[in-house]
Image (cartoon, rainbow, N blue to C red; front, side):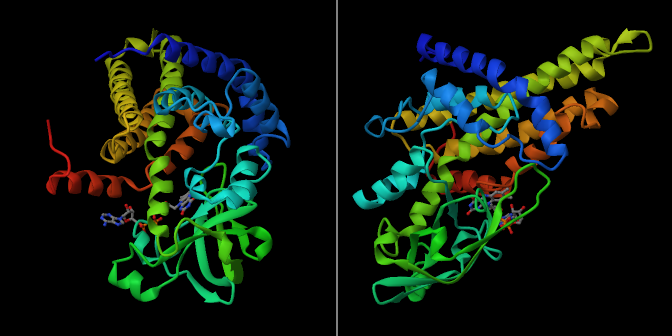
Amino acid sequence: MHLRLTDEQEMVRKTIRKFVEKELIPLENDVLRSEREGKPSLPAGKLEELQQKAKDAGFWGINTPEEYGGADLGQMMLAIVMMEVSRTFVPFQFGGSADNILYYGNEEQKEKYLLPTINGEKKSCFAMTEPGAGSDTRNIRMTAVKDGDGWVLNGEKTFITGGNEADFVMVIAITDKELHQTSNGREGVTCFIADRDMGWKSEYIHTMGEWGPAGLVFDNVRVPEENILGELHKGYDLGLEWIGFARWIVGARAVGAAERLLNMAIDYANERETFGKPISTRQAIQWQIADSAVEIEAAKWLVLNAAFTLDQGEDNRHYASMAKLYGANMGNNVIDRVLQIHGGMGYTKELPIERWYREARLWRIYDGTDEIQRLIISRNLLKGHVKIG
Ligand SMILES: Cc1cc2nc3c(=O)[nH]c(=O)nc-3n(C[C@H](O)[C@H](O)[C@H](O)COP(=O)(O)OP(=O)(O)OC[C@H]3O[C@@H](n4cnc5c(N)ncnc54)[C@H](O)[C@@H]3O)c2cc1C
């Protein structure tokens, strides 16, 4: 057992930190200004320009298999990279990746959807949630009915990340009502790849965050048989795999943001004087800083453990839920303390704290709410799937 980063991991961490400090953090004021004016966070073309710079530095397709031109750095590296890049709120993501479930496509689907997504020519989204089915994914109502050489989709999806910008959606619909009922929702649903020009409509949903998901409406949308992703009636497992992929990464995001914010609070506490002394000399402030540092450290180890377990080829779902649950709550707690330490300034839009505060609230909701993570963790223990100690 070795509880330190390897030389290679440390080198990657430092390189990403330099990239974040040089290329992303200087954009923060512009991002805040644009968002205040209701404009997109980054001007058109800027994300692609940044992705190209990252590519030149060797960071492209971080988790994409080498046969698709990616770097395939593994989950530990992904965790390290995500923690570093989350030290800024600038909405940057590395280029060269695609949704995990697109790799289940056949050769034609890979050619038409996977490769263009990796290359940044097409944008995807994934749609499981419906107005009546969020946590309770087995309660979906959208139907796909066989008609000649295709399927006709009807229904509504909601809260779909990237749904207003996507060129195609991987959408889950019921294809066999009886099987869906008798299997308690695990079978009888299928994942379809539906291009926007097949006729589905999207509408942006305004949220308390700076980017919004979309509602999607399918009104007799015809999708050809060859656009079934994976196996007919077996789409539920694909859905769970898509949701599961990002779960522990939410914890990694929280760690990166919390580290940066706690540093801001430490600097501010040392500078800000009240009653003739810096507030850092007050125990009330010191304890908030100490508690935050301990919680960040704990969350970091949970995230690294979830990533390491996956790299070993083991089932990491229990640890992913722990990293997500603890990380998301840690992030919210730390941001709240950092805002408190900044007093009135923390509440203003002059500083990015309130922006992070709004964004962080989502971490406890999407990719499975706090309550669903607790349900998973306790079920694993109570049923003996995972043992304590
Ligand atoms: C910004 C954003 C982006 C999203 N992106 C996507 C996306 O790209 N694709 C997609 O398919 N979905 C997406 N979602 C949907 C997201 O996964 C759901 O919102 C989430 O799973 C919760 O579902 P819900 O909102 O319907 O809440 P509900 O399931 O209605 O839950 C309401 C409350 O009840 C609690 N609860 C529910 N069941 C139980 C239980 N058994 N025990 C105890 N408490 C329970 C919940 O924890 C929650 O507190 C996104 C959501 C948001 C807000």
